[in-house]
Length: 146
Image (tube, rainbow, N blue to C red; front, side, top):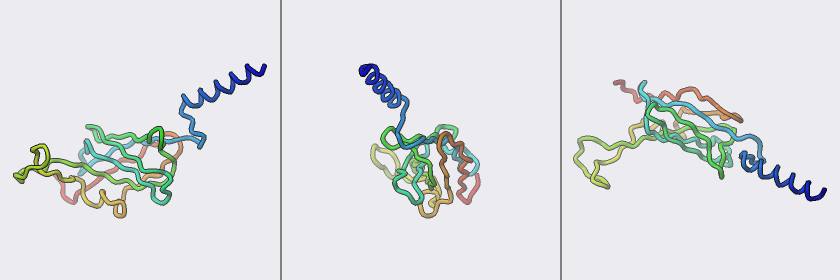
């Protein structure tokens, strides 16, 4: 009888570990999209930074070719529910300056307007809830249209 109880406890612990239980309540994930001047922003870094509670951890992901992203956190630092500010960065080779950077490429520039790169100035916010979150699109503008 004692052996059966031990096996049941081991089974429950292993089942919980394989299912991703953290003991802290449900984790979260968030999906959304980023556009710049109405065009999908591919290969951009999207960072979720806690507004007030640093224990939430900072999380980042990269947009795909359609400007879409999903952030889940990782095994050590899950995405936790709470309020975040969102910053966006995208590095690209600066064309036409003739300067050579590392690897023989031109200088790298961030193509995202400064206000979206700065934690204190970004208007982008996300209130993450437990479970799956479909965020409204992050629509960035540079002040000039193409």
